[in-house]
Length: 153
Image (cartoon, rainbow, N blue to C red; front, top):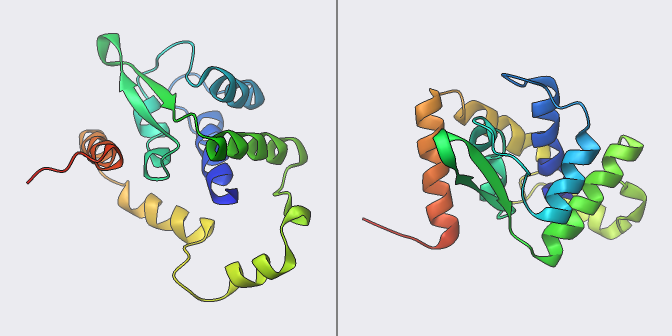
C-alpha cells in the first residue's frame, strides 16, 4: 500500500514540478479529486503519460476523451482508496507515515529479496520511459490491456 501511495504522490509531484503546460498548484486538491470522484473533472493531453505508471500498479487507467485529451479513471478498491489516504497524509507531513509500519514488516521489506522498492522501481521506470511520446503511449496502452486481462498474440 505504501508503494502505491508513493507512486500516486510521484505522479502528482511530476505534474507539479515538470508539467509541459500549466503546473499543478494544489496537489492536495488533485489527490482529493481522484479519491472522491475517481477521475479528474477535465481531461488533459498529458495525463496518459503522467499517470501511466499507475496502470502497472492497478490503481487506474487513462481514458481517451475528445480531441486526443485524456482523463484518469481510478479503480475503486479499498486498497486504492487507502493508498490515496496515505498519499494525502504523506503530502501533509512530507514523509511516509513509517511509525505505523510494524517493525518486523520493515525488516522483511528491507531484506534483499524479490521485492522491488520504490527507489529501484522509480529508477527502472525512468530508464524505460525515455522514449518518444508515441512509444510511451503505446507502452501504456499495452499495460492497460494486460491489466484488463486482454491478451493477444
